[in-house]
Length: 461
Image (cartoon, rainbow, N blue to C red; front, side, top):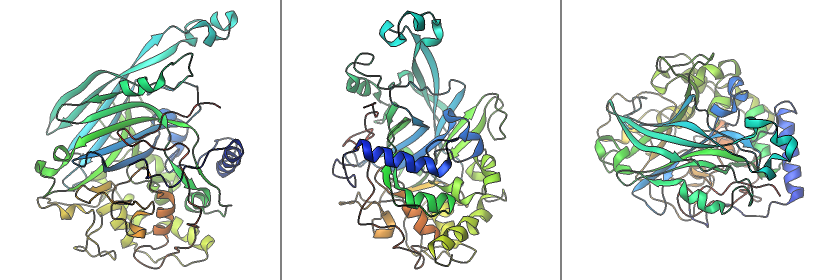
């Protein structure tokens, strides 16, 4: 993700922001607020519980350290600038890596959080009246513990890690870029971690969003989300992620992120004291492929149960939303069973199977030592795919093999790509001209040229 990668860096004007926010608010209505992002509020329960709502997941070869992979899991959507947000101290936030193709996590990176109350300067309390409100007004600083779980062994990678807070302005958080630097830590074995607030990197064409998610026509506003998220970012050597430590022979991994919470009323899987309540692999999968009434259930499932669970596989092979979207687009939806979507979401792409997309790209079958490969919803990345220059935000649809669905980069326009794939690309004709490409969407803040790549938080004007 070099500085030249973002599709465009047009200035975010007050007028443009107003139009975009109005457009996004229309999509969900005033009761739910704006929503244009891929998995920002993807199921009824997470809609009401922002702290465990995974918004977007990214996995890509680090452009400046190409022997490593960067994984970014963003949580807590639509954070208003200058307002502090915290991770849930009763939750476990995890990034899972499947290098065998069995749908089971061979490696799990787990964050847990603790609060540290800090006194609030009087100028932030709003005078004596606010000051009299007491401890409820305190700012909260968070720390985290990061552990790695692999082969039945748990290793603590970080203790008392620093969480980059919200940028509260020059008076409350002076020298904020230094706080960002403080939140980047080296890990044993050559990795790095960042934990904290960042500008939401998601962007899209709202015409694509409204068609894909809601099956509704909409005017083509192209915008990012001018708000912040809470990010968990890792940069890990490929040898640590690959099956048997051999990234050349076994380059394909599957990635997903989950949040599990103590004492939740939601159904889910997990240990005796924690239940999984959020899950995210491929962007748009839950809110487009899974029927609405089953989305909370999906958030509680593990990938190793997808093939036999009676939900994920049949929903992928015959997604009802494809027919709705095709009707609005004026095209015919490809007939079920959708073996192309099975490849994209559940198996990865390879010419070795019976799928219509005849390309060896990111299936676990490409791993020399893989056995027992199953259908499981994961974001799959072939770590051996070279970093492309220039990069195309439409990924595989424009011949860029490093782009989505081969992992996901910060520049990838995944909503448009998923919309076009739902209508049949690249297995058939689809509807390639449905979303105009001559006026590309743009990031609200440019990504940086080095880890963690995420821009500094958006601040109030």
